[in-house]
Figure 1 (cartoon, rainbow, N blue to C red):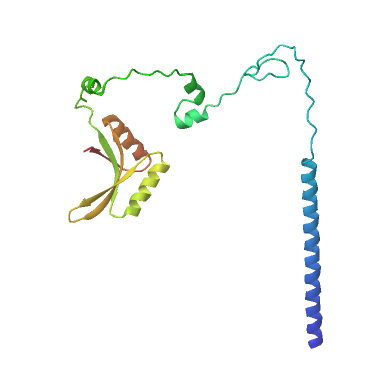
Figure 2 (cartoon, rainbow, N blue to C red; figure 1 turned 120 degrees about the horizontal axis):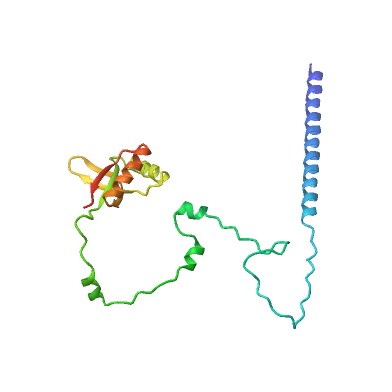
Length: 197
């Protein structure tokens, strides 16, 4: 029996050696193939020939629009997705807006000229939840952030109940608070409108 075991062990050893050699050969072939494909791509390309301009020729300013092979200027593409995503005017539109500087007034005169806000401009918070566990409040805040709402967590100590964590949005005026509550309801979050104090 030991003679049969010896043949099996020798067969396994020879199989392992042949397997390792075959794997090494395939790896070498693949690496050589990749190395040649990289060297073909990385070959130095000659610089394009540039026509020499005589020193006495007139200087022509390049146009802002690229010129096609037909000689007609192509219109520059204008992408608006940045504007749509951020609801902000794009940089080109902002550059064209002239900046006006208001004359500086004395602080006393400015304070007297500002009228007091009317009582109808009451501000409201939208409370999306109140939790004893701060982790639950953080989860709701994250859910609101994924839905596109910016919320804050306010810690409040309530007598005989302990510390609570309120998840609030705002402050808003009355109509904005109502719109926010409706938008939250569409996202499955029931919220309450509270007076700002």
